[in-house]
Length: 207
Ligand SMILES: N[C@@H](CCC(=O)N[C@@H](CS)C(=O)NCC(=O)O)C(=O)O
Image (tube, rainbow, N blue to C red; front, side, top):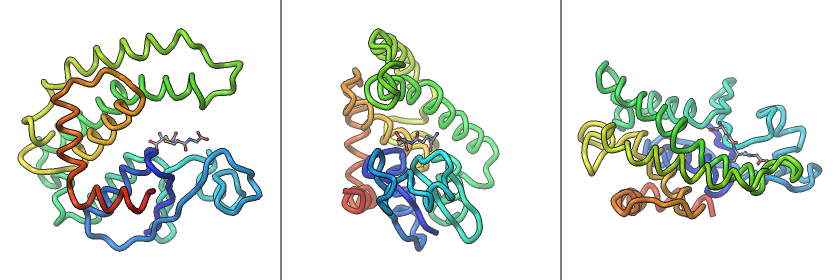
């Protein structure tokens, strides 16, 4: 497998999962918003032939190309069943896992990405500064309901570390960096998971 990514962007989730999985892979750093002639640029035709949106992450596995971080996380989990990163074969646990992943993307990540879009990602004429208060309000509202979806204060689903924990810890890391109000227990959860050797190795690779 080859993972194309950039520092602590959404690709970090996938890099961390690869480190946790024990699978063999190659990490290829990509740069955003640089001259497209640069071979590392996400806008270089060679990279656009893998990811036509010019975004990270992308994963190739033989002939297959994946360009959505959650599909990549699921593929890593399914490719390394012994890692326990996905509750494979347990219908109810898998359903709870899917529910949490959908909640993180739709309710927690969405306001973070709104802030990103309206501060640097969108062309300036489309940025709406008033959006930032709305994003903070939405994040705080969503986070106040999260406890109901979590199995325990240690792990998101069941009694072991899974893809959902990577996604959650990475999303809280993003929220902290973007100065959203993150309750202390979730800051602690982020810190606890980022202490894992796999996370430390991934951070080193991504830096
Ligand atoms: N839904 C995609 C989103 C990917 C995405 O938007 N990635 C950002 C970095 S986190 C990106 O590459 N943006 C390109 C840019 O800002 O030019 C996923 O989860 O993989």
